[in-house]
Image (tube, rainbow, N blue to C red):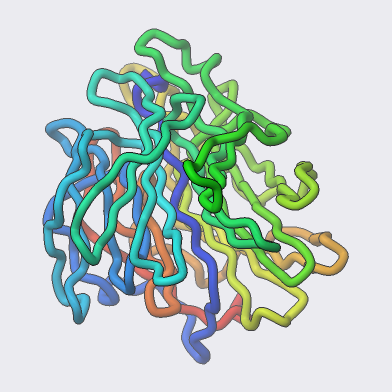
Length: 357
């Protein structure tokens, strides 16, 4: 059932992304995971790639895996307090040593509002205030803008164990003000389109902070092409150009060459074109897409032209429901689902000069 299997949004990719002279996917940048897993969350914590929770062939997981010092292997860290899949993660704090993990789906098929914090330095977990809305397939964005810092929880899917897949997609946005003691979640302006399993990222300049969401699943069987942006300071949403392909369970990144440059490049990788509930004679009709596409946004005018497919952007192999993160200026996709309930331990990373097409 779709209501039991909605993926979280993928972890945000934000930062400098400039590796000149090379444009290709490679499977040699990170080691393979110790276990095959999908519907997990990932983040770079204290300089180490970490993967939280997710779904194994045997059920949902509470485990945490982080790369060791030279990224040659994965080390099992302390587990979270609850097992969940379809969760989201974001790094907070100036030292980047703490990750917050939010939402997800329990093994019973019910969404959770649980929020926890992982400190890699002490290898420990603590609970944070729960969200107002239980959901999986959500986006989680960390921000530090104009004296405010905290988290935004975006959209997702509310599953109560019996909800139809046509009813549970959310537009709701909540903000956790981490500068407040104790921190509290407050509701912000909703997204224009209900969605889950989408890509999300943030662009911060001296004058504005924009959160972008792309693709995802919504009411109906097919994935979205729609892209929209949120003005954090003024609390409103507006549309950006739609992607070329319909994508959900995608990997997504926002890249900038330099903080003072007036443009940002949005990139979408892989995913699938429809809900996994679309089945004929027990076989999924959804197609996993190995393609990648990009869009340049002018940050002064806040406008965009159109997305274009990267001619050399084919992934090493198509995958969806994977963790993704920016590791050493490479966009890395970790684990994921190859087919229905078939997960992989493999990793693949995109290394590119942004001028590549």
